[in-house]
Image (cartoon, rainbow, N blue to C red; front, side, top):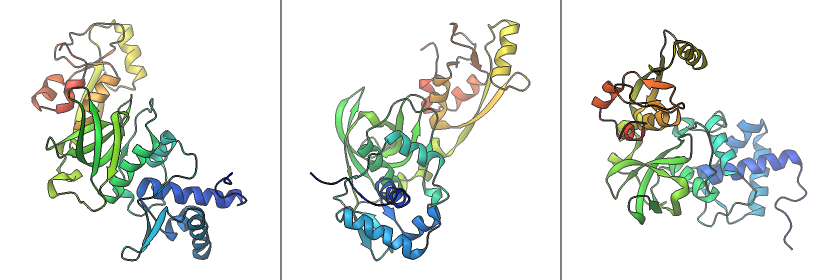
Length: 294
């Protein structure tokens, strides 16, 4: 029986080895500086940690002399038990201070309810880090299973499930792909993004809009006061700035009536989008997901 990975190492070194695997798995690269900055160890100690990891998993990483850091190999296999949800949470709220190029990581986290498959999540995370396209097999609610190449730039949680935001070469537009609907992934290391496929060309991701949210007009005065307090409203409104690509998700998650005349009914509808008419004029694609009469 094969011994457990890194058997016999101290708890402190195991933490550093786990950090190496985490960065390689989710960003596709690792440097001695990453270990030194995270744990406050010397260059010699970081070198020993890398050597220990390579000894245990010689096929997982290779040194790239041109970039002067280690990169994930095509034979990479995760050694340690990792949770996709915890890894995404870490990428969302932590490690930004210890990774070079922290501005390259874009993870918009709301509330994680569904845990996506670890290998698929890590592939997209590496693709974002390395700016490389991914060939996927994807199951769509409208067209069933299909193969396509996408150029991912961000991971986000819409309050129900994790998505990857990417340029879809098949449909020639930026779209959201549910991670749990991805059947397979193949990171195309030798391919690169074209000029129109990067995040700066995704207008709905780059541009923000203001949502003016108010207590639903049909509520009693006491209920409106309660809602104002609950949502921290000022002058009976809550101003929420969000990316255009996330407008519909937020409105749907909060059950915000998005009709111009506040037509929706139901005890679960406590909020109304006061500037619904203005947003409709903006032709925001994600707005179709918001609660409405349609």
